[in-house]
Length: 383
Image 1 (cartoon, helix red, strand yellow):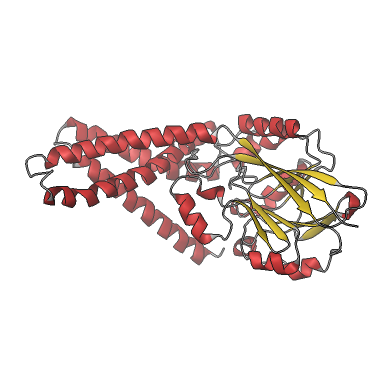
Image 2 (tube, rainbow, N blue to C red):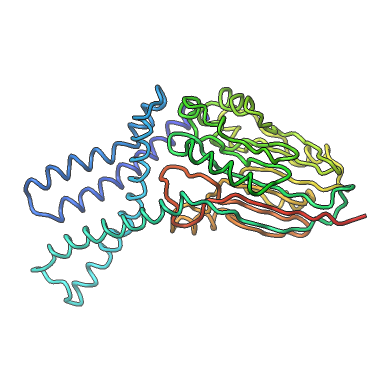
């Protein structure tokens, strides 16, 4: 991504962040009469609203436990920004209606503002707390599919696929150990990591060498991975070698053939171009490297242009990236953006599975989806 585009992106993001916080701040300051409360409210609000930005700036230069704490607090604050904004907007919209119906009068409008803000705090806390509990209890999502192609003597293949781990200041040792335990219990033949293994800045990952806690002793065919957009954010020249140093092979527009002639295509993430100005290979070029009479599994981080998958004759595509919106009601937005934002879909002879991901970005909150590991049992049929 060139400097001009990066500057534009950050200006837009910061403007949205600032205006959202300003709106919530003003609603809170106007909910109570002048006094000591307003002073402490202002101090606490500015601190909480600043933690995410300060944490990211400090983390870029020197990752510490302190920056981890700032990022954790900042993440929860972003959750409050979403729900606080939505609930306060509903309050603002309902106020004229209530005044016209004379349920709210000039005498009790101050009370309405006070209680609408307090109720916003309570509901937001409940949603954030529930979303946090949901985020730290990952599940195994199982699929049983059939591919009507022969794979030699291999009749069945068990795949564990994990997308969007987002190792960093929030997803750390405990989470990666839990993931390793889940994979050990699943006993897959092979594990695919579908991109965004790290969260962006590699500093928090290297500081405690987080990937050393990732193991899969029962995997027969090992670990294969692809890049996600976040592998490029913190610098692919450092991030990718770190991942590969831990025995994880990252496929960069490559094809790997397993026993039985099962072919795995791993694509570079489409956002790699924004950071290194190098286009990934077209899918039709990658298809020239495979035997179309044998099973073909495509690993592509972002589930875009699925018509190309169908046209190419891919048997199974595995993707992530969407988080299934992560927090309600953002899952409705991802459904509008992606043909498949989560789950399974068949397109002619091609099958697509999109995971909601194991980790999170920003808030450790999942109120619109579950953290998950995919467990896919494939049966091969054909002569």
